[in-house]
Length: 72
Length: 271
Image (cartoon, rainbow over all chains, first blue to last red; front, side, top):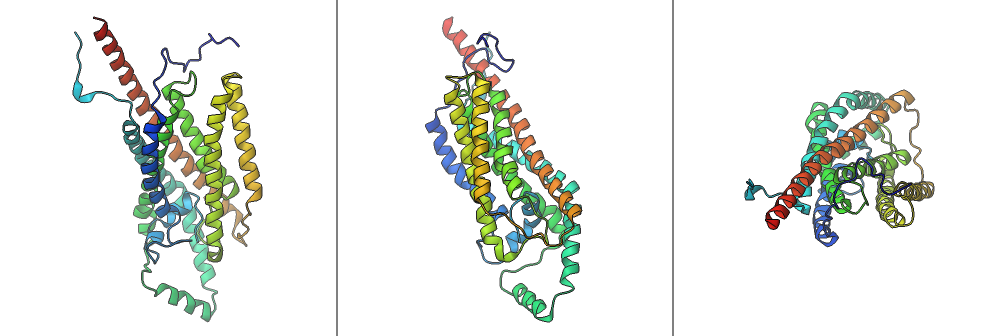
């Protein structure tokens, strides 16, 4: 296949890429925050409990089941 | 005459991506809630009905053990009405927003690095890979289970197995994108992508074979189980589809604005 047959999605000019090092710091800090948020919905007060009890588990119970995380 | 508004200068920064991802993710959470409420909740209610029917046959000792558990500090009971409305909404909005932000940072990482694929095409691709690696592959090995299925005694290893497969799947997907990029130097872009996708499938199939299976269904009715699982997969698909489409629209607009801005500046510099 010849390289000149441009795909419809191909841009006219070279796309600028964001330096990976610049994205890396955001991935580390936002990644930790996102994982903590997902932990509370997906796994808290199941295998590990923070805080003790079942209030978080009970509140997000239906979302945990329907998002496919192990429950009960 | 160049009209330029310095207050709204479009900049291609990780922060600009992240804010768009959070918006797309919140929207995805709301749509996921609507789908889950409409299609999933009737089957959760059915499963809880079965759970309660089974509880009627508990022995006196088992009843006492359950009551003692419920009396421990920190134990609360939340009504079904709250669980299926505000509780479900909270969970969907939190997970949707978190995933939207992660998808946006992934999109920021790949744009401009996938050969001739545009910003919109790259973002759509991230949404598709996100659905397959974060939702679909873990679901195929460890499908969602309704209430009344699953023993509390095994929640520890079921949780760690699920997240182990999720981790392998996401790392293999990232590796596949890196490998596809390397191979595209030697092969046609589509062929390179297919080879990398094949490698991803091999890795997750091997991981799926090595991880233990779960067999805790007992006599749970197969039709209720299927309806519940179908609703769960539909919920996951609607969340990822919304993230992919909304983020593609927002990131596409961001790139159009940034390109127009760069062209204006190039023109201004040439005068």
